[in-house]
Image 1: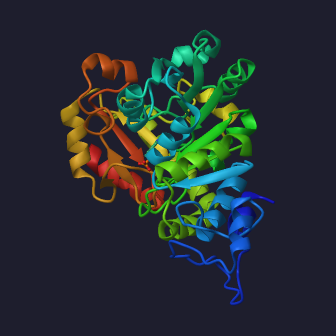
Image 2: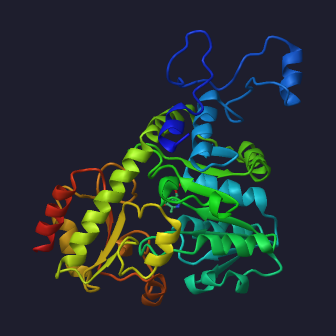
Image 3: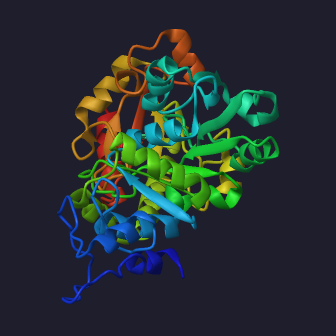
Length: 387
Ligand SMILES: *Cc1c(COP(=O)(O)O)cnc(C)c1O
């Protein structure tokens, strides 16, 4: 089945006697058994019953089936946040002394987790550049256990050749993990390109309404099962209530992402033509350094657009302050268009050298193009740029 069909129907099976059309919120911490033998059967994995909601819950499982079908993955898990997903994946598959090769251009939370908390447990992070990731054979060492990367990358939307990284990892028995949050599985299918695990912050496009914090991972049962076990131990599972909202959001994901793609393309074209803007970063533009890679591995270029006002913080801040429809807020992937200044959010406190390394300037603005009429979004940018 196609995504639009799968996302509506996958997982919607467990109905009891009342036969509701949608899977209800099983707002319960625990589940009832009739006999001791039923508990034994559950413990031995010979039962479709549930025991305790930190382990599993029918609302959670229903949404996990949708997420798995979306990535064409064997298994999927839901977490209380994207960070919960990242922590649980890494703790499940790493031990002290293991090296994680990680793109230096990565979500800040991932970077800090590797540098601070996991380093305390003896995990060795090795941060590499985009050039390194273009030649992944060069950066995988004898102690490398995981290669963790993102594409497209925040905020420059630079892209990594996903298949190349996946192939290099597979050839050396190293696990590849992609953070697919920016693309979403509608635009990019990492598992089909050979990546072992795909994680996403469900807070962004998957839920899509900026009202749920969550995370997901998909992959083979063999790699996901140890993460499920770690999720029980860490307690990073999602709650049934947000899971219900996420399941509802997922049903319109293909529609929303198609519109995000179209709106972002219109906004990027407008900004690229505008003399007041120095540079526009959008993988769909032929001028983007990774346009060729993006065209090869993505079926849509996403809803994120970044642009630069000659590196000038003051000009960028003036435009930022003057916007009327586009809201000044962190995060992305929701129905509302949002704007952020990377030097105030993801790159806050970075030195000039670190900014150069990340390809970020003080005059950059990052847009998450929402689902408003693109003409209104463009008109808002136009009047703000007039300042
Ligand atoms: C938001 C985000 C995360 C973290 O997700 P949370 O749901 O905020 O914990 C991870 N990676 C990327 C690319 C993100 O944008």
